[in-house]
Image (tube, rainbow, N blue to C red):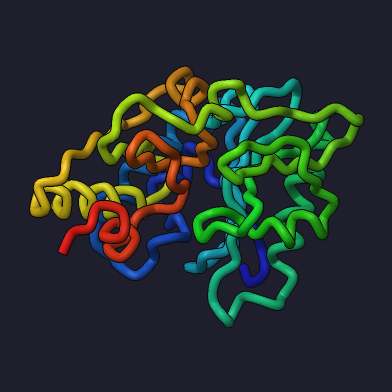
Length: 251
């Protein structure tokens, strides 16, 4: 129905579109990888709530204890993504309704609040932090690499980045990408990096994060993807051709 939202469940996951990549009717490797990833997350309290039509209008969040991010805290929800894309959908209050549904879930579950990853400068692949601040989120922790943890606290407590997440460096000088299967676009970014680095004979390490424990121990902020080069955290944005070429100097 128009203007109605639905949650993905074990019963409808196989048939519902996943919002981000909606242009193709053929099976998409990134979408199918996310379906598998989600199937294992739903019984952990992970929520994927979407507009009940073929649109990129959705929110995704999970209990912080089981969220694949190096953030520590008691009794919080972690907000991975909130997107309303397309001129047909913006300005209709969908973003506020989705955010308010998440905050209401936190309150009904007796949670301490909701947190999310932000940055001193808005990053392309992170949800709009100005929008979040308008709903009561505030910076509660930050890293020297320019990332912030935003939180909406219901009881005065706040979460923190893990000590490892604040390191922001690794021993390897090679291009290193940490990634999981949560975002459907990750597959094509990883394949681009793999092919372009091979063509440029540039060494690269593609580190597939496959467990909660791995994600909690990562040496950087992480929402589902993080890039290091010459031992330093560069970005949590998914690499495209232009940004990759700027890093490795490929032609």
